[in-house]
Image 1 (cartoon, helix red, strand yellow):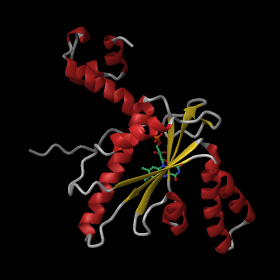
Image 2 (tube, helix red, strand yellow; image 1 turned 120 degrees about the vertical axis):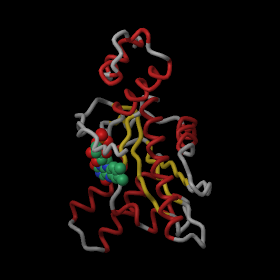
Image 3 (cartoon, protein in one colour; image 1 turned 60 degrees about the vertical axis):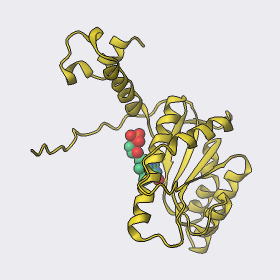
Length: 214
Ligand SMILES: Cc1cc2nc3c(=O)[nH]c(=O)nc-3n(C[C@H](O)[C@H](O)[C@H](O)COP(=O)(O)O)c2cc1C
């Protein structure tokens, strides 16, 4: 996409009041590109399960996740990439928990097949230190969540579809064990990753609630 089209497509001309987009400085172009990327990221489960995600790409995305800010420099990100039969075992752990809670058979069956909807499930957790207080734990979780967004944007840039899943799966001891995480780690995301089969509807955003205080 040419820079002028790119800038127009995200409404930057209007935003910054530039009348000749060809004169925009490189910073404005970079921001416009970033805006396109951020808006393009979608929660999309229309994924080709037959097309694997290269492990080197996954490693790269985990790396970019770790460039999120981290107040305590505790580097709390923990990742586990589940492919092949591991996705079925993940579903089995969740199904077992549902069975123990006497859930409806349909719900249990759904859980069993749930993680086979993508070629790769990426679990992301927070690694906590033994003596971490509440503030540290919260801030480390914030750092991991910020890292997840880096990762999702990276995935979008790489042409992948992604979907941040959550729910009861995140709290299960058996899931942490399957992922190789410590029992004390906190799971924050179970991300479906794969190449897209198609687009999904765009949930538009409201105008930002921004108080200008001076
Ligand atoms: C912490 C967190 C947990 C989420 N968990 C789920 C989930 O379990 N199931 C789901 O369908 N979407 C989940 N989402 C994705 C949101 O539903 C999605 O971001 C929202 O619908 C807006 O769509 P968009 O991401 O395409 O802009 C989660 C998002 C976040 C930030």
